[in-house]
Length: 167
Ligand SMILES: [Fe+2]
Image (cartoon, rainbow, N blue to C red):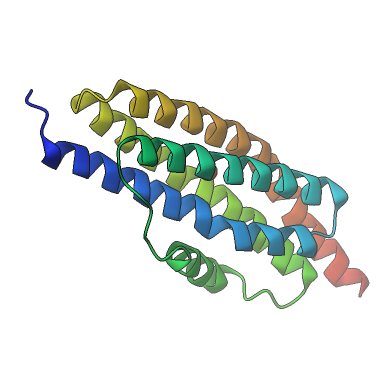
């Protein structure tokens, strides 16, 4: 298929979206680290934060290589994510908050898995194998992180009940 500026602009736009999604999680993850009651969760969120910052840098480098630059407002998705999970759990106590945070982190990973699937497919179609490879690499990291987050949901939800009974 013909490769023109329109196609390259589209891929650059998708990469910029991905940068915004990665950037939007930085503040939220820092809050999650400080709010975690269990050191295991704090370590998991810290690992997740380091990975997110690195992914953002890799995407920025790729966008730069394509001749683009990132100019989105970075925190809008975070606001959407927070609003959605605030409906779930008001974060009334520390137990609620811990459960809400793990749900939010897991939800964001799955949003990213889907987003990188679309970026990889669009980049492949556009003949941009470098972007497609980057998208697949980052997607694998998101999947690995989601797999680590999921098993923490149930213990945190149970812990909220146990702590609630004790207090
Ligand atoms: Fe990410």
